[in-house]
Image 1 (cartoon, rainbow, N blue to C red):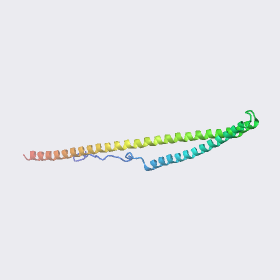
Image 2 (spheres, rainbow, N blue to C red; image 1 turned 60 degrees about the vertical axis):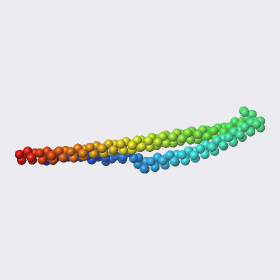
Image 3 (cartoon, helix red, strand yellow; image 1 turned 90 degrees about the vertical axis):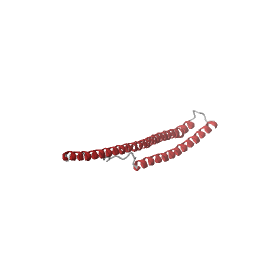
Length: 166
């Protein structure tokens, strides 16, 4: 309330610090870049797994050909071949597959998180539009009310002048 008795209504809203529901382009680009990089890493790991699988299949074919040539299962040469070549290759293949699976899970999590962010962004933008419309409507109502109060105060002042005159 001012000194002269008038009422001042401030309808400006403090929106400092509000990003209006928009995800920063840097965050979107970083997330998209991470997903792209992870997909490239997955393709590279798939190539590694395919190479290790082919190498293991070749070793297994050699192992089977040794058995077909008549080397018995208890033979030292066969056991040494198994221990030196097949077992490490199988372990490397299992390790590569586990790494690939971990990469796929991480990419799936990141993609799901990115989709949640995008959905959240859309909801926030929709709510911001709705809230903006609501505040505009309230602003119009307050302006209309202020005009009525102003008009009423002018009429009342005029009536007081007429009453004082009489």
